[in-house]
Length: 491
Image (cartoon, rainbow, N blue to C red; front, side):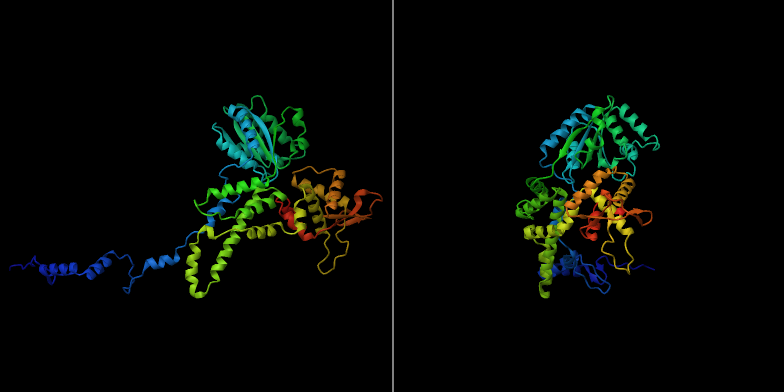
């Protein structure tokens, strides 16, 4: 039986001639051609019911332009490395000379860098090291986390990828590495005053090891105290191993303005107006230079002022009528950086909130020893606090100087950072705090603490058994002490 095959000229129910006719009609009709092309190139997803979703409109509503403040706020962050070191020419030359005569020549040596916080000590040193063409190893060790001064030996070895076999042999292993190494290396001890102990043996060993004739260790110690080597390490000069001294003075107004402007220029858009007004920068620099000269505080002020200006811009956008909300939101997202200005008012508002009351400024200006005295007073006052249901007496916080000194010595022992001052020096500290209006010293005698809260009669004529009272609010004292990282755990 013969098999019937389909005609090659037929496609389904349409013949080849019919298909050709349809194609010609489509080509001759512009409307049909546009429709056909749009259907083929359409990228809209089709749902189950066959309807299409316009993705372009949906994505337009959710897409947001990044805030023009993000890059600038990042540049003004404390942790962001400066694009270049502005100023400090004399300090840079001293560091370069030290490196050229020690580690770059394969020799040992030591330097002590001092200065107030935020004066660019560590940043300047690290920038000079990066600029050096000599290939030498350099490590930075922060001494604050170390609980005992002797742990610094293991910390240095770990930083050099030469871990010690044990804590007991870490000193000997470090000495062997320093004296037998084929090339010199640089060790930077940040916050080196944290290694101060009862006899400072650790610091003496490190500085003596750096100046050994066969030493390959270039040691740099960084701390805030200007007289650390003279006061706590007097034997260095006698042993002919005194380090080179370099002090960083607080930043002046022109220095702070130049550094802030340098950071802003590094992320500025070409041809755009500055986001922070020049007058606002100068106000920030003058206020910071007048108090501490701490560049970190200037960076914080500018960054918080930018956040305040950005929040103010968003509040203005939300205040538009509901019918214009969408248009206002789109306009706020596409604003040019020039329309988001940080003015003098923003800087002044942040400075007021940071500086706080005059009492807070007075407490923050106290040195570390004076804050230790306040910490001892707070500790004794807490143990003598009356029951909650009882009203405290007027003299419930009266504490004898002898009791205060005993608690101060106890706190120094727990911190293991500084040796306590003598009793005479302690009385000078209390007298200085009285002059500053922080405490008041009464002439009437009070009993001295003995045992668990008991008191014994004061000895007549004893200068250190006078009554000491806080002249400021206890809450202000606690807030000021909590800002000191070392003292906060004691409260």
